[in-house]
Length: 287
Image (cartoon, rainbow, N blue to C red; front, side, top):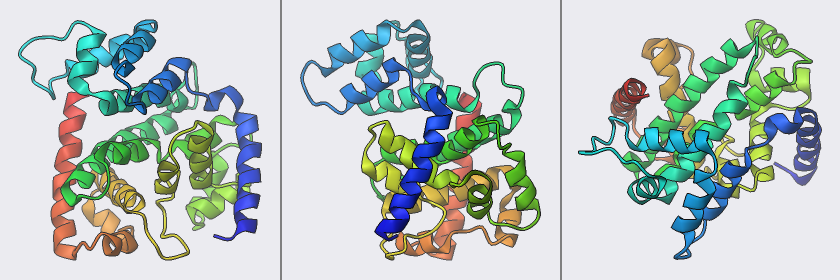
């Protein structure tokens, strides 16, 4: 992507972000947790505990997560300090992102939240599948893959929350055969992938996450970052969980460029789809 295109894209993202305003802001406690989780100081655990305990809602979500059936602990954790020690900084960061981003997708008193609830379910499915794929393939850090999966539809929900134009206009163009990114740019002047990538940079998250969120096609320079390929495959498997494997094969949705980048054969991909669907199903039961 050349400099002129990037500059034009950045201006379009900035324009939409200014309209979205507070809807694209993460709560202060989330930012604090993200900041502390990037530190290696001996006092980081103590600082993280202080940041979390002042927010009752976030504290309760952390304790619920730590005590979920997925971990099978012999006894319940009752303090944030215990939860941090048990889960670790990366898992706490993911929990923070999940809690913070949830409100961006669902919101309060939103009459049109059904569409975004569907996107949220897909985002969670993609996140847990991406983390599993990264471990299975040895492709990057699993927790970073989780974050990319969680945020990969962020741009759509930000566009949808604008209200005017209505995202239904994009869906109408899709029904007419137009490609997603082209339809979004036609209606909003920017596509959801560029918007999500731009949003995470404005949040101060690592640049590799912004690159990983550009998952709908290979980069123009031909070099495919593993995180980008993992996100694309996880999104595909999450779509299979909703529409079925045959429907996605028939529509040609399998990202062949991602398979090539990760040296995955057709036979191996079939096994990964089976494994990924099992991981998604297990995660859904533990929600």
